[in-house]
Image (tube, rainbow over all chains, first blue to last red; front, side, top):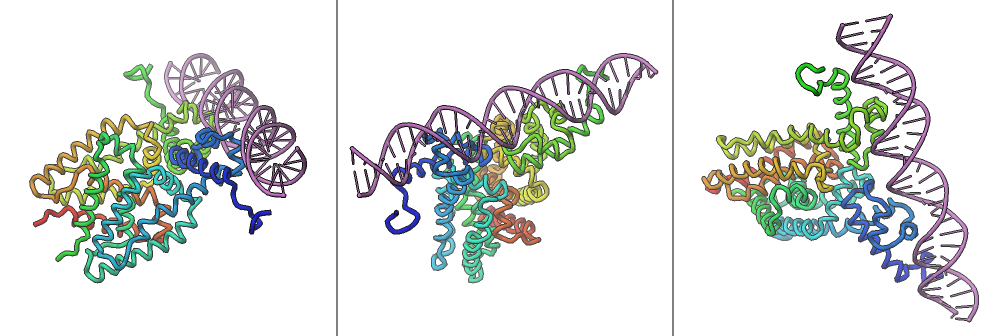
Length: 208
Length: 208
DNA sequence: TTAATTCTTGATCACTTGGTCAAGAGCGGT
DNA sequence: ACCGCTCTTGACCAAGTGATCAAGAATTAA
């Protein structure tokens, strides 16, 4: 039996292989989507045989939801950090910066979510309507408070959050288009960060 | 022989069926992506048998590129309308409004492109690097001209265009998320249009 | 060492799917 | 009515895919 629970904890090799699988799955799912990805691709990617992979995750869908959940938490961290006690413009600037860096440093996670939501969010629909909505509503209320205090130009907080999501994730999700149009210069993301922060800050600055 | 060309023009029934197919293909491809969609689905959707559908388009990919090309032109029309001779703020406001209405009235086309680009734009990569890049560069130059004249706050024109694309298409592409978070109120898109135009206009207004 | 447990895989299955083909039905011009 | 062309489809095929299973290899605990 296990040490203290009926469900024994993972062996070293188990934890290691699951990590390998999740990493490979992120790459494959983000590149081809759920239906476009094959279990074989993921298995080959991490050097395991297909039946061996299915020993750890019994169904393809199990791998998919596992990698989704595995990255969901990190993805929302920047929004959680938005602090009601901070200076409004600084808080929002910080949020935009964090989001665009996430987009630059982990574009695969961004594309994974983008694909999932684009196709109806069947796997994480409940999460969106529950925890995500709660978090967004909470932060929208903070922003609304700043507006009421006259510390921020009046814009709908929910749509402001959508605008920030859209603009920052655009560089990861639609990289193929951005690269094709710009030729992908090395300072692309720096320029994006500067332009977006400038644009939002000027738009949000309270009219004196 | 045909009236004037070696390639005889389509019969009435041919034109009619191709239109049926393209319409059904847009719905299916936009919902499931290229690999997720099946020829059978498209055939059933428009009341044709699978072999009959493949009589008009010999390969699945042919249907896909046909529907992409069929909607590409309309999709870029708003940007083409951006007029150097117009008043800067009014022109950009008009562009944002046109884009968000396109997003509201034809979300399936938006999702079709989103999916295509998300997965690397293999079918339209050449178009992005050619005609699209040319169009964007041309319009970016116009915006840069306005900035140089001091009629617009200084922001990078390319990134401004990306920001407008991202924010407007967000409502179509990530509808599942937007609906989950907002509960999808009837005035959602009106509010979005108002918020986005306000945000961009205030951000672009030249500092007096 | 030994025995239980965990891990690994070749072979295989059931099913889906893109695509073919030959034969027939329908249509248009004469 | 006749003939050539377009259109339509049932049957079929080959490839790919998710998933299973039994049997063996490796690991771990005693």
